[in-house]
Length: 328
Image (cartoon, rainbow, N blue to C red; front, top):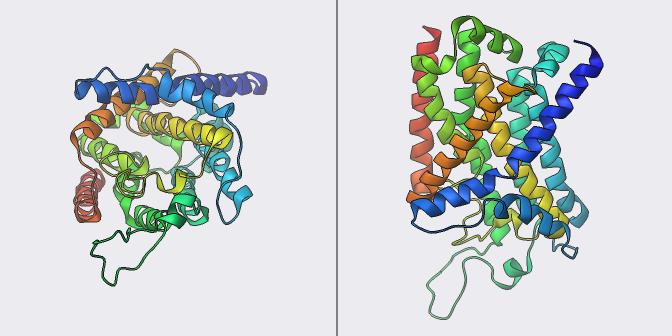
């Protein structure tokens, strides 16, 4: 395959991914509404129309320590997510060789997580300044409580997510690499072309369950959305994002959902997002993950650290068992 054709395949994959990802937030909200016996929004509203609407809103300077840096963070997040998608495309895997590896994939995902910490650290919304947490209302009992801004509380929570919260997710990613005896993504795909999808093995089944739980944590989705908990920190690091900057964040988050599904289909099914009819597999995976996340969100309360930490420990232990089975 010549270089012009390869570039065309890469561009085509990006176009399909861009179209699909903007419909996933609508699918999630619609599925959650149906579980809760509500009508829910139109499929196009939370993703496509929300992004379009924000682009035409008035741009105001955010209340942040470094406003320009704070505003550019969603764009950096979108670029990082696009880079993750890029190394999953087979033409790029072959061209980049060892650079398109699981190590690079994990590194880029970790950078995406760290950006949330920067968002929380830079933001100082007017709401936080006028009502520090905890609120000292008349009669409220917060004796000796240390006040902190909403974003500061969210930053502490995002640090927990970065340090140990997403551990099960990353352990699950290495299960296919152990079975294929290689960290190169193209080798993992070729291994499954010979032996069949890793999903249909015992480590693959366990890894799938752990992957899903871990991916919910990476997405800050319920019940692990305590970094953006609406009941206390409202939206945490996203409070000051408006107009086109909010639109870019919506795009980045929607793209991350689809890219996560592509990661799963590549590692556990041996079906990377190649431009053509086979890209239907990652698309189906993204829809299944989105609907499953919506069902979990509809039935689950928001976890506090009391529930979050044991869940991470238990899921990580299960992931380690899957790794041991894969080694043996």
